[in-house]
Each structure stands twice: as structure tokens, then as C-alpha cells.
Length: 352
Image (cartoon, rainbow, N blue to C red):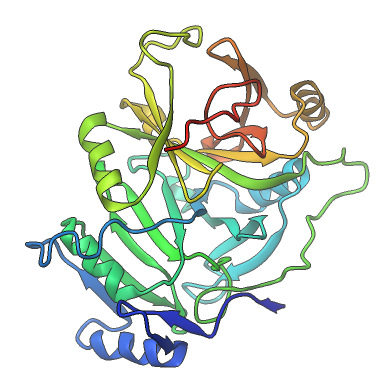
């Protein structure tokens, strides 16, 4: 096991407090609401004082699985993503299995077993994703979300680990802020994970398509103008590209509005917002980065794994591989430099 991160955490005034002191302050404020801090919508105080929140990374996604064992084995076998932590929320092993996507900075997937009685029920809530931020300060984040009138709360996972700050975005989106060093493991900031974990492979399995990064999230919103304004007020994400511009070129069959690409941190990680509704809105779309991306080689390897996938030529220029992963998840495989922009690898984005 390896510990990542610092022993001290930044505060609003530029000074620092120890993890122990912050933990004690969290517990002290949580009187009457055990192990939880919450922010309820209300009038902003000192408007914009805590905004925008500076986001550095896409930290993780989480979702429920119809068959957790099968899904974990699929990601290990096909994409080389190993298990490196477990979150024992409910005790007795009834928590989330954490799969490592990236190491520096950490990025991961947190998978849980769905109730078998409801495993086939259609999703009715948007997917969950989380940003990583530096100088993580629970109180400052809650204050920022109060200014946004966004319901929010922070809990101590397993009684010892700050589980970030969870809150609601447009359309009830389940969003989260986490320390940038959080890997989904133990430790005060969830920064302790098995850094030597390797993906399990069975004899005779083809080599995996080794993903290296969590590259992007594609997210549906019901009203583009209001959602875009909300995300840009809350965070420092800036638009670095538009996909499917009205004036073209456009991908064959695409008929929606242009898709803004919001850079996360220094990039190439990004969030792409799509205006729309229906079943696709509840389907997680997550992009992974592959080094030395070659669409033909990737498709051949997916064929060896007997995985359903297709190549879409976005705007007639950029090949994008869309993979049908378990549990209705749409995985997109791209080059590690893909920023959602133009160019053969989608690596050309306008910088502000």
C-alpha cells in the first residue's frame, strides 16, 4: 500500500490545518446530523466569494452492476483495469469495488452490485461522476454550493474517510467533488490504494487494450443554455471546442444542437454536454485514453475479446471507437491526447 498526498490541507485564508484538525471540525459541525455535513439551498452570502471552484481532474465514475463479478472481470480482461481498493459502506463486503483507471493523477470506477430484484429496471437517474480538486476544503466547497443553491452533503465513509462532497446539478445530476489525490481507497482523503494491483487474466485470454487515462464524460442536459451557464458558474471549466457545429461538418445521422466541450483542468480531460432526453440520458458514457491509439488494432483486439463495438467517424474526420460495455455503459476509446476537438486524433482544441 502507498499513501499519496500531503499531511496538510489548504484553507480559505491560505494557512493550513492538519487532517486530524479538519476531521475534528467536521465531526463538531455535524452534531445533530451524525457523520454528515450538509448545505441546503438558500440565499447567497458574499456572492461569488467561493466561486468558481477550480477543478483539476475527472476523478471517478460510479454505477451499479447487474452482475458485479462479471463486470469487474470484463474490465480487467478487456481493458486491463485492475481492482485496487474496496469501499465497505454497509459492512460485510456490501460496498463498492474500485477499479483503477489512472494513477497520476488518480482516476477510478466504483462499482456496486444492484439489487437483483431491480437489476433489469430501466435507469431513472443521470449517471454519477466526480471532479478532483486541489486544496480540498469541505467548508469552502459547501459554501460555494450554497451560493449555487445546490443541495449538498459530505459524509465520513466508514467513519474515517472524507467521501468528498456530493451535490445535485441540473436535472438532478448526482455530482461530486473529491480531493485530487483520492483514489477511492482508505486514508483520511481516500488516498490509500494498492498501487501494485494488476488486472486478473485467465490463461488463454487475449492481451487487453490497456487504457491509461479517464479521458472524458459525455453528459445529457435538458436545456443547454441554462446547464452550460450553471456548470461554468460553479467551476472554472472553459469551452475549448464545439462538436457538430451547425455550419458543419457534421457526423452522418447527427441532428442535434452543437456539443460544447468543457476542458477539465489543463486537459485533455473534458466534459461534453449534449442536449436531449430519453434512455441515452441515463446511460453512462465514459471515454478512456489509449497510448499510440490505432483504430484498426483496437477494433481487432476487441474482436478477439468478442466485444461489440463500432467506429464512428465524427464529422468525417476523427475516428471514435464506441464499445458496448456491461450494464448499458457506453465506453469510448481514444488516444490519450484526445481533447474532444478536431484533427485525426481529436487532439486540436482552442485554448483561451
